[in-house]
Length: 124
Length: 138
Image 1 (cartoon, helix red, strand yellow):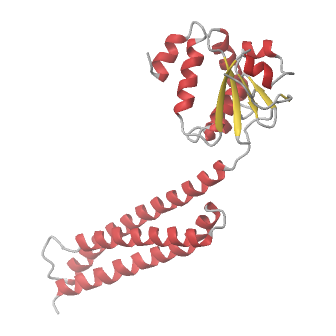
Image 2 (image 1 turned 180 degrees about the vertical axis):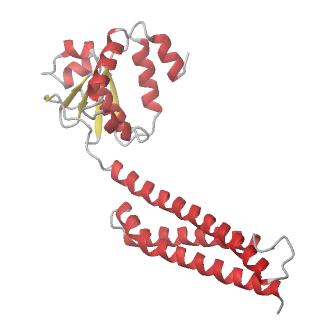
Image 3 (image 1 turned 180 degrees about the horizontal axis):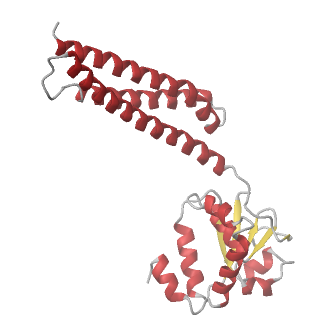
């Protein structure tokens, strides 16, 4: 695997800020960002359930593997040099359900969580 | 030769001997780790191994040299042995610290190389058809 495509919601401030943070991190694997339901996304993944990609972050590998929600977050961590080990820690059977709950909570309230992103990831 | 000079010579012999022994142990057994960390690239592993051992010698012999001077007057054999045990004990602790520091470096190098080639943490939910980028994407 050499590249991961991240489908994110450009209308959510938290998502934009997480994206900015990801862009700055040193990586093992290239991350390509694409707005959900954008023309490009619809063209490149014709069979993908695009309604679902709007509900939570989706990552697609260059082999066509689709990772949704918590798995997508783990794949983003896995792509980063400094956080790859965290992706394994969080993917263990003990921690994955918790990661799922936290991620789904963040996704549901993402428009209200902008302030949180400001605190943890900086930016204006 | 008086007691002080004898004490110094014994101290140097023990300290240098210990340093050489620990350095040789590191040199011999650290190689395996490094060859694995550098994916079987033996020349590179040998080179890094050599550089680490040189650093190890410099720091330890530097410490041995700085710590040579014995503060209080030594006139009897008992005082000599006491001073020696104190000094050699310190050298051993510094050697031990350096040794574990080197082990830490070895294991970090190895872990980093393992992590770099590790597979994804989770399996995909499913697979989808992908198309190349749009040729005239704006």
